[in-house]
Length: 208
Image (cartoon, rainbow, N blue to C red; front, side, top):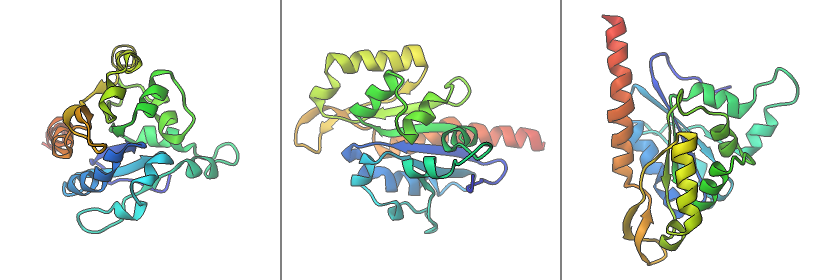
């Protein structure tokens, strides 16, 4: 893989899917990049690209953030032993966030589908080794659908993926109710308090 982080950094891999909450991705990426001991890369589904341009994803210093697409999954591999992108990304990541996780992507993950780079990455990841957290985002009626409850139960209890949110607010469609993605500040705080702080404390212990 081209993108390598510096030793000791927390590697945060953000997957994003086709939900309007994807418009908050540039802010999340930029805020996380303010922490020098943290490295961010992004995996996008084709539908997510309706809500942002890869050029929008820059660090707080204005540097571009690597965005992985389905095309790169296929272009990178021609023969053995060429790198397989979703496997290399799994090895790189210390934590994987899917924010937002659309109803479609949730359904795919819960049923084991791996028809794009993001779902292949999730299918190839053991959450016991690399934490995976999804942040659902969808219309209230979609979230309250019986199938959604079953899918979340499978994802959380059988696969071991953490489900964070959704929250209740006025949605992009104008409806008010449960279904909005966790606030971006809370997502950033979660990464920093649960993962970056731990990573830094381990590093300090090793150095001492």
